[in-house]
Length: 369
Image 1 (cartoon, one colour):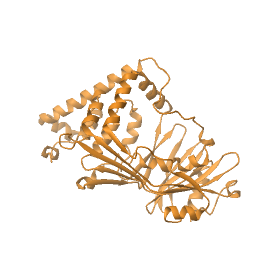
Image 2 (cartoon, one colour):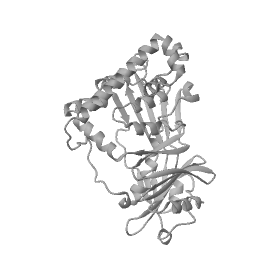
Image 3 (cartoon, rainbow, N blue to C red):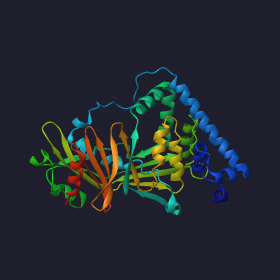
Image 4 (cartoon, rainbow, N blue to C red):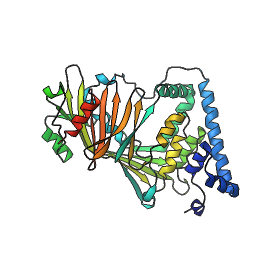
């Protein structure tokens, strides 16, 4: 244990002080601590490098974005096929949970995080396009080298994931797969009340990534980045991060014009971080990545309970608000294409959504039995 951490502010607090230097306690500490003055100078240099790199990328000529994986034909939300719509929300639950503070789990051998609630942030429409332009401005040989370095630094198992989603013939089959009977709505809006649902299940899966710390640091260093959350490679050469996604089930009502209503559920996915990784520092490292718009960073920072909150990114044009239902607090999302309600109840994450109004989505959610 490094004793200076008891008195000196964490790396995350120093980074926040760079953004808003209004903390009198840290200011007073810096006046009398040469070590923290040096740490702050290094953080400022890293931030200045990121600003210069972004400025250079923004002035580079734009070109079509070349993806390293096969591209998929994009389809408007209102035309999504039922299986894709059914699992779209539930399969994202494994991500973003890892941005949690250590809290009381810091002394455990493995830190496990589960979703208890939801929050939403809005992603500006031009953000993805701008990031794509910046990526394309990086010479292809540099991108290839970076991909090769990370491929050597990360060992992912299993290396290939099967789709794992399939249709079954009855609610009883879905219940046998889950080990419990899924909640069923007793009220449905027209025209969904006039058709029979289809049933889909998702297999449980676990993915582990073993990280070669020295190689990851080398790859990040080539981009001018320093991740304070990574351990000392001379002490901890490798760390393993795991994500476990439980079995899921969805009931889908689909009309002839491909409008759909989805009722889906699964137990909370679990993210496992080794004790050597400080999740609070990891969050700060990720929020300091070049290209993240300040307004998006501010929205993410406004989420207080990182340990139990899943962040849902929303496109422009969509809105969200907290609502009370079924004795808990849920998240209502509305867009021109439809609405969705997400909540956690007795350890189970639930989603009701599709091509319906907000009021209709809430009625369906409240009618689940």
